[in-house]
Length: 184
Image (cartoon, rainbow, N blue to C red; front, side, top):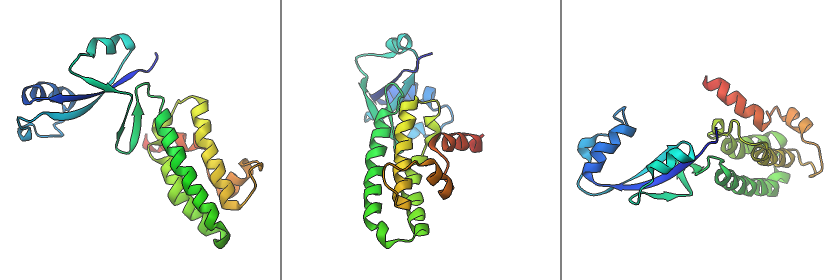
């Protein structure tokens, strides 16, 4: 089954809110008594096949290509291309900054900084990356490889597997699997 999604922003009136919101929020995570007569902006993620999604679209709903929710960018095809691009930009910026100060740090301090700043970004919501195409996972692995080289001050052409082992870091695929197993 091909994954498809539609990110929809909808301005809902009080009447629409009272009929639609309980469908999506059955656990009563928000009180409907606090809804006023003003329109409310909701982000609704619709997931289904293209035929199913075609039935749900109407002229009153505005769709968007991608949306950020809880610090994670969801795109319409759930490929997470936008998320990985934004993550790459941020991580490579931090890696460049680490390279600038690396001559003044010992290896343990450099490893701690790398783990706290870049690895925390790579690990955030990484269980959502499970079953992504290898090309997307490879982009994340390149970030980690670059980080490992910056920590040990090795050149770009150095093979990274021994470096990752010496730092006791799991590869990206292994980190994703570990996260899923620890959540289960």
